[in-house]
Image (cartoon, rainbow, N blue to C red; front, side):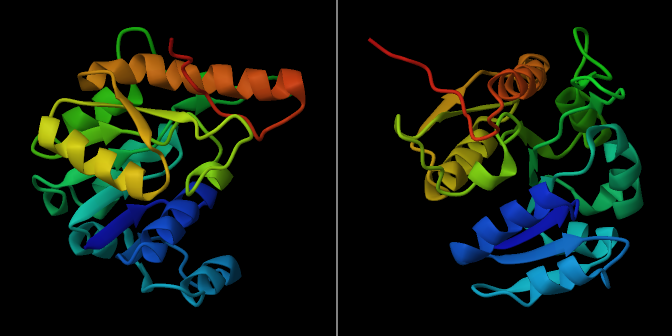
Length: 215
């Protein structure tokens, strides 16, 4: 499968590495393909790793990933071309974070909408699924914790799309995936990112993840 990724930061590259490792062809869309760290990523084994413009990546991907800064997502998607997304499954990893000096981030939007919902409105024919937004990027692929693998939440309006993303998560090493329902549950998941950040700051440890204890 061809995977297109909008966003060339740590999140986009980590997901691209995961997809390439399990055998998919990946293109990261970026406005700055000549940056050394992107060239290094594209030349690393295993897998086919390509660099292109945002528009080229959006056209290339059979499955799309949006891993831009949450507050810049609309601009990035419009730059890539809404028409390139069509009815594709779109994994939304974003959190609309607002940063203030000296403190933890907060959400730029919330309560009555979310980044996930706004992306779905922007891409009305695409099938947006929120995932990967509640853990650090170093643990996206094959997470390993002493207490066992953590849980991942997903939400979205399309059942088959959520199954596609669940299958991806299983192959990435997440055996437990919890479906929270429609894309409006992004409101809780994006707030959960803030809880993750504040917990990490309180513990002085960013190697943390969430797990639901069952009885």
